Image (cartoon, rainbow, N blue to C red):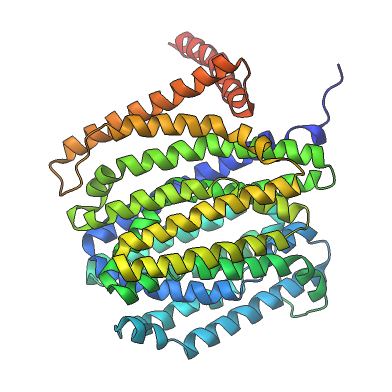
Length: 510
């Protein structure tokens, strides 16, 4: 039998390997960030985080409304044409200058809305992040095109370390919210500097290839703009209808909830897009690899999201302390929403870009924002944070439906074919949730770190055991192994084959 050509191998396996490496390193960065946040949360107060959250959300909102998705365009077209990279750099720079001008001109709106004058100077300072990001080396995206993320990881590592050191130092000395601003500025400036060390590029201004750039990035940029309206108003809405303290609690809780999947899903999208480009003209292969990726994502993401929601009370008390217990329901709700949005989210985006049907992403974003934003506003207005979380859930459910519809259309398949890849993971998660629901949970102040640790261990053991047993049972009863199960079996076989060799080597040395 002839060996399968490299180009014919399953992209899902190759992408999974690259994603695993990237996620492992990014999780190291997340761990650094988590340690930083835990220290800052114990030194500062929720109101400090609220000031930073509202200011940062406003700047991110303006940035999102002007996003041009030039990085995706570089990945799509490559960098052989120097004039194209010059165009990318020039467009990035012009955009950053425009965003800074708009932010400075409108910086008094948000402080007036939330009735807190301290937010204005914070917005002015954070605008520097946008200016610096506009001169990032465009050649960094070329390495991502080849699924080489080593330089990207190093750049992020340098930024994270320096940002963490700066923020903690200022917080410990001055105990002020300015520690968060200083850390953010140091991190962004160091990333820009590092990008030129790792991907040298001598900037030249020029717009010769602007048509080529915007022909691809147009719909992606429009989708990002609308997505921003659906997401970046959250902290501002909470601060406007409630108070700055509530905005801080919401910001910390929602970011912590996204921690388990916050690295997995974006990284997957970045590795999957270059991989699926190889099959953009071969629908059967594109369909097979994409559905494999959907199945693997659901197998991993759904139990992680649901499990994290159940251990949230204990984890929040241990890491952040009793003054942050109001964040517990936020962590639980947002964790579930992130899991729901994982259903086809990153995959549908990659497929649409690979097939040059990015207008589907714009339509998805419009539907999502038009449903989520009003639901979030009405919920916050009538019922506070709990009502806002219901609005968040409504948007997540509709987004999942839109993602599945995009996959069905672009892969020329059916809803049933997609459902057959998802239902096993859904059944396992449903059984896991039913078992964990029976475990008593304490939502008040901590009754001892030891008790919280024991509860976490019990919930993790029960959840993992239930999910695994149900998945294995379905596998055995059906008599067939799906892609995710075959992948797990392959990993287990590789580990089992190497373990005796390593043990034998160790025994021989002894």
